[in-house]
Length: 352
Image (tube, rainbow, N blue to C red; front, side, top):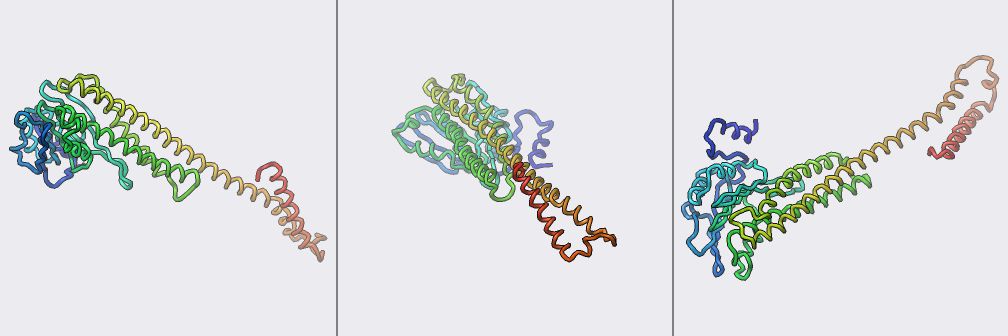
């Protein structure tokens, strides 16, 4: 039984909203970081105490990031300070969630997947939970990541839209970089497809069948994550979230277009991967047919030669050629002529 299955079974019989971390522990220690900002200032607080992670004073927006989800006491503490329902926190601690959005009057809860593509391990993903509140945004990630780096840089620019907008625009900016991460993964997938195409068409290196299978599996998993993502962003793009202003809803419509583009690219790459497999299997069959054809030709050429050799191998005493001085070279010459005539016939029939 895996650790994930064991932890899931440990929740059986517990009351709803009981926090149990389900998933792999990916950091040794849970950390809480904060950014307090408005039009005039942006202050960064690293590794703050739980007691400092509540809502900010009036006039500030606060972005709280929790890295590591195994410490349920920290999740409960932040939930109490921001008024988050225990069932929402339960979903935060369960890292096997599919992308989804839950709308409440006081906040918006969103679950996304942070996808990554490594050359050796293939496609992987971590869960990222985001909560939009009236005075800030909460993010919960499984491990340290640089995906939010562009947002942090933009927070340092006092002239940018991020500092001059409310927490709903920060919420959009975080969602946007998570969606754009898919384009980076798809670029790497396209490079893998190009390399596999070169290998299949030019028969370079060992059999690519395992690589093609891994590619198809990665694309299938990516498709399973992107299709619900379209529905989630569609809800926000239609303006159904009460805390998302109309001005920010326009940006979510653009993000929805990106999800459509990502889904279309995934479908195209899946078809290309399937075509690669078919091309490889066809080329494998063609090579096998060529080998069988050559072996058949060789066997066919040797049939009359074996017949001639069999006649002169019977050793009857009254065979006139046995006493002939030039009998042996004459038989060899006959065999060569027969083989040459057959090969010439095969070439004229385009069998060679």
